[in-house]
Length: 116
Image: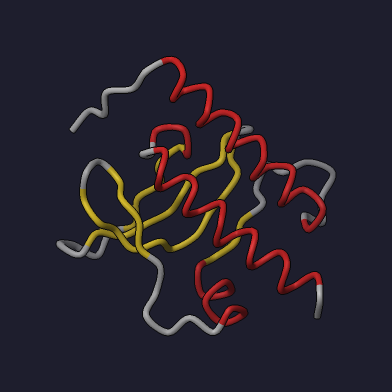
């Protein structure tokens, strides 16, 4: 399913991508973000979330399993309820509301580990 997107919405997605990058850069232990990863179990354990995290990808609800930076792109990792495979989607290809949701949960996570 291809998502129709306006130029304004694409700009917003890139803006949110940049905000996520800046949010996570201080907790990355390397000189660049390539290869940096956060798995969902770290987020759910830190924030004491039992039911898991869900968002929309290609029009269906999926379970968030983590994020990873690869070749300067932030990929969102997720699984679908219909199968057990893990998928990686570039963040800018997700629905804007889903990107906001991922950013929000990452903000909560970074805030929590910064105050440990």
